[in-house]
Image 1: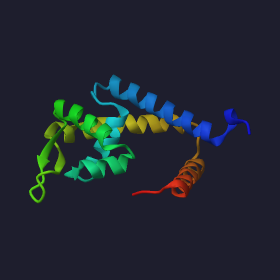
Image 2: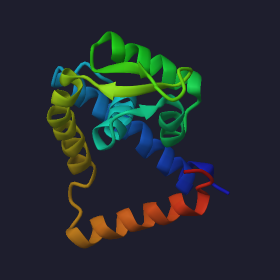
Image 3: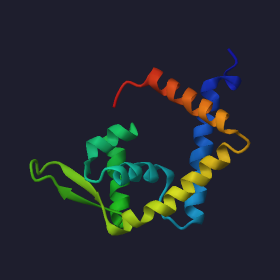
Image 4: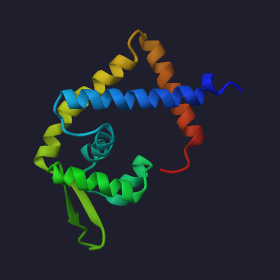
Length: 144
């Protein structure tokens, strides 16, 4: 097998390049977040008040890594931790006003990144590409 021309190599390279480009766009926009932090925030923009374990599961990251991201985002005043009233050992993560206001800017950066990635694709190719990626994800998905 030629690993240099394998689908795994291409997918890995695409992930690296997307993350790198999104980081560049977020930095240019003075968003003060990374692509990984953006991924975490997208879950809170969709449903505020998630616990750290939910976020770790959604991000396919260990709890310690998510805790570090939460620490950074909290220090930047994008999110806040509030103890769950039913179980004080569990923190719920909520967006601050500043965190909610960041969504349009960050979303525009993500859209630009994806538009650049699919430049030259027609609508049908975009749909096929998305469909194939989703199918591959479903084939390997073991959680969520």
